[in-house]
Length: 125
Image (tube, rainbow, N blue to C red; front, top):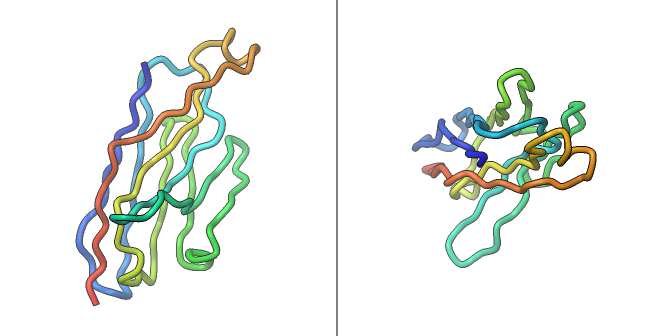
């Protein structure tokens, strides 16, 4: 079993910054991609940014130049530094990870996709 625990959400004024963290724990052999997604009421969950184990990143156009994703593989943790926040960034932010639970799973490409419980980010105007 693998768990993702997010932290760092909260209320911030427009133009401000927040840093979200997400730590994975449990039965982990290795973690492939990790990422952040967000969702607002009535809308589908959307990509914010992802990062591979090798450090390659993919950012949504809406956050390019403002958000930076990073990870610490030794801690199984992913971060997103969010600068120049806008009211439209208000959402519940979810952490995601693609996890191999054992070396056998890794060899057979049997991965588990895990989601965190979400953390609310509110940006006031």
